[in-house]
Figure 1 (cartoon, rainbow, N blue to C red):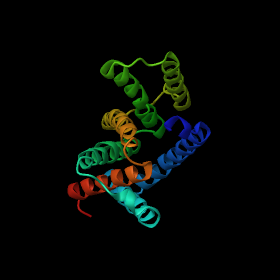
Figure 2: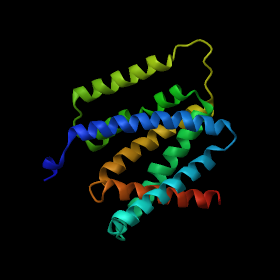
Figure 3: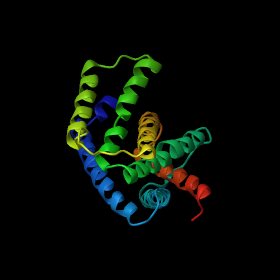
Figure 4: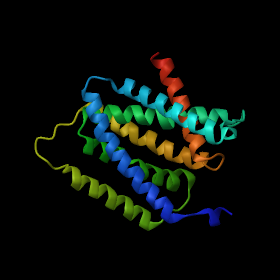
Length: 206
């Protein structure tokens, strides 16, 4: 059953690993962006490379997981464009124009957006400890980036991109939660990156 399949320790390990990789990604991406490549180009390269990598893994290990039904296709297209393409592009724009810490502080408003969506739109109660955890996490990030520092100048376009990234990231979280009830995480990621890559190919041919 679903309850028996839950492995919280493995889940926590994955979260910590993902957070570490996300932090490394931000630093590496900042260096790459400062070398002259545009945010859109970097997003396109990343989406295309990830799609090819996931597809190769699935073709070798479990090709049947690449099957897609007609009813599922629209969801995967929207997930790839909104949840993957825009999240990455807006994130790269924001860290290119803002200090990484500030950009992440704003983008990490996404869990708060998700909690508000669940409470206000869906109408489901959200536990008090969730609100407390969100407040502590955002306060901790604010302390780390020292938002009170003198001389801190923020770029308007960077701020707008970071806020939009937070909304897109929240949409990604909500859509991914729905997506993994229908297919495995690897194939969901594969199609997310695939449709993101195809979207950017239309916007800017290679």
